[in-house]
Every structure is written in structure tokens, then in C-alpha cells.
Image (cartoon, rainbow, N blue to C red; front, side, top):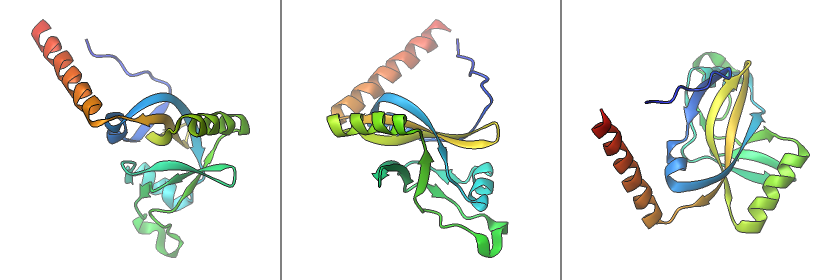
Length: 154
């Protein structure tokens, strides 16, 4: 049986499928984004790419880097840069916990999904460790085996 998605008021805009393939996700955190109006309108149209994005610390704050939000066509001269760094909104305690994990074990922070909750844009970040090539192949084989088992039950 397929799982029913939880109805928690989220409107999913973009998902980073590549992150789930390349990285082992150790923990997840929800963060807000500091955006311009034209960026919000473009996100609502679903014109976002998270595949090459990552988070980086700068001056004690966390920024989302390399996230492509396409320009909004009707924004005229007030348009935004598609690849600009965007500040992530987290509490000092959350930032401290993430920084300790990253410094301690050589891990990275990758955005997993972008969605709206009660009208606010949120990004789900994952503290991740990179998978080796053989681990990626192993997870693909495991997924294929599970898919075959589900087919045989039908």
C-alpha cells in the first residue's frame, strides 16, 4: 500500500531528488528564507532548482548558496538575481547545533525541499554525509529489490 502524505498545510514547490541519492541524511531542520517579492512570485510558479544548492556559514549566519530562482517576468526593473545567496532564518541555538555537527564530522548542509507553510516560504535542510559510489549502487539495488517485491505482491 502507498503511504498517504501528511496534511500539515505544506504546499510543496521543489524537491531535491539528487540530494537523497548522493547523500546520507543524518538530520533535518526547517528554516525560513529572506526573499524579495519577485522571488516569492517566481517560487509560487514553481520556477526553482535546488539540485546544486547548499548552505554555508557566513559571519555566524547560514546562507543558501547556488539555489536558482528564475526571474519573474512581470517584475520590470525590480527583478532579482537568480543565483544570489539567500539568508536562512534559524534561531541561534539551531545554528549552533548545526555548526557543531558540521565542524565535528566533516558533513555538509543540503536543501531537501522548498515549500510554503501558511503563506511563508520554508526550506527543509538536511545535515548530510556524502555516499561513496558503491553505497549509491547498493541503495539503487535495494530500491529495485523493494519495487520488485511490491510488484510480486499484486
